[in-house]
Length: 170
Length: 63
Image (tube, rainbow over the protein chains, first blue to last red):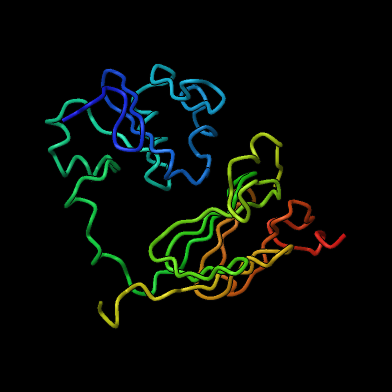
């Protein structure tokens, strides 16, 4: 199944003795929980940027679970542990396996849109909303976007992570 | 396509050119730095980084 030890579709993987962390850059909205909480493991200025020996497995799991998107996910290396769905729910495993995560009926009709103002970072919007910018008008359905608050993104109106380099305080 | 699906937009998000981000409708804003959570119905968030009332716009972008 696995063509390459370090890659999966659209991303990379990093292992320690217990778990594998999956990194999908295209899904990242720069919410920046990972490096704020655990720079020893997640350091965007280092290559490779993930060092699985930088903290305990428990701490890495805790911080990966903070990621609001699918950009970071994790799975036990021991496949038998991954088979236990109850353990998954207990551990909030975010590696999206079919059947476990596709329960669309659980979405409540009038769920308010979540607007999160990140510390010294962008504003992250999540849910069902109508978005207009420039001449674009679209309906975002159960989606997530990240809007620049510092004014220096090269990808306006969206965040491109530049606030970290310019030291935005907001 | 079902007529009455559960994907009805709950809020209107408008990026105002050379101005703030306007959000109106059914939403909850959580400000992680100032540790505040509210659902005011309508807000204008600063996008230029210059506001003295962050995360809200105070028209500093016009200066």
